[in-house]
Length: 174
Length: 443
Image (cartoon, rainbow over all chains, first blue to last red; front, top):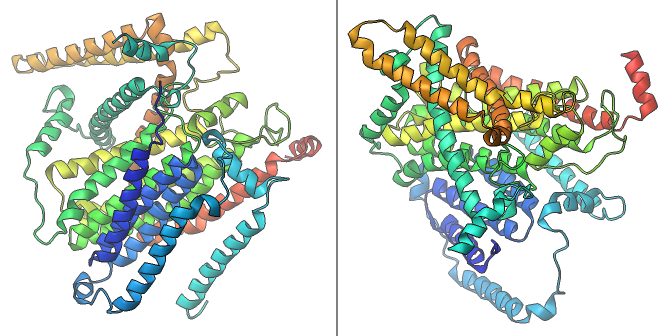
């Protein structure tokens, strides 16, 4: 009776949005347009997370990246004079290396696409949509299943170091 | 055809205790979306009129009096004016971004209402990440504001946009901490310090808006009173931060008219400007409904546990009808006091007609079938309306903050208080019963 929302149509739509957004980020000259394209790509990515039945990750993606980090990005970019950045050369001339890297990555993509089934073990969705948040908390802090707590805390420590570093570098006298 | 009717009726089955989105019913989800959209538009129109009237009366003025009786048609006249006005785009503006910015703001402001719970089943859908969704999507509005200010390519809008983004990002942190303390409370059924009943073990909490209200029903107290005074402090932090989030007085620096003309929307006119207006007011309603859901028991009527029983249920279910009858009576009273000159005849008849319409709605709300269904929507709206009145009240009373004062309040007062609140909430939730008894004795 109720067709599932996570249809291939939406997958292709969101993926296309991500790809187009990503390409626009590189090709647009105006930095603010780049940032807006990046936001579009990030939002579409949140949609992809939703399709994977990971609403919590999608919500965090929207809050942190689209709502938090990108706002600060825009905040800084807005103050840069556009006229100067418009005149600057956008691409450097390293096209030989560029082609080599693109070919290598393309080869990797094709290899993964063709041999994907044998390379990666087949996984199943462990957590349904209803318990996704609780599932993540369980993986992080659960009494028996909390295997990722150490990595999580170390990552947060890394962020703290970055914050303190920024303060130390920005302020001469603390 | 028959299938469609069956599909539509399947949701009306009294056994279905789900929101249309959660039940996956496309038809009713669409109906609910339209209802919320229409209701929101009416609320914004009403709010526009009320704000001018209440502010005027606070300042011993009359406010709009000319268009319609007591200026009741003023918002409609304004909307018509805005639609007919020339739509100006500055020559040096970034065309695309200037065009897209109002839509970002409006989309963010309206999308939030997908998860607002007007009742246990009266929400478009219920998400596992309800609160996160609301905070995330409403934080996208700042993108629209920033881009609007930048795209105008003008000084005042740019300064307004910068102020706005700095302000919204700062207060979002404190707001988030207050929200997290509530989410902790949903899991802490414990005796705690002042908790009522329940085992003193932490359960799994919830982020779903409907789940949060149901947790308040189960724990038999609104979260504003839980772990007194912690719930109250959290509510206070949120109440301050939400005014700053919506750029309203006394935190309306981004659009401070005496300094920046109109801030980020200085260069906007006509329809585009009205989109900003619409978004601002619906964002105010949205954050108020978050506050109501998280701290004030959402759709729950007063004392659902202490005054339980069919008699009390009947008593409280009369309130929606009485409210509308009262409003209708007020209109009739005003109509009787209108000047008896022939010039005012149309206005008097119009006001009486408006009163009759309100009274008719009130009578309809007394019918048993309607009465039982609208109770939760009424209580939710009444609580949100109280917040809307507070917004106007703030604007009428508080002088505007200076920007450094604003930042100091955000980072040096609200944020540390929020951290302390979070830690204390977590601690109090796990206090063992004997310790709790001892603490109660000491305090």
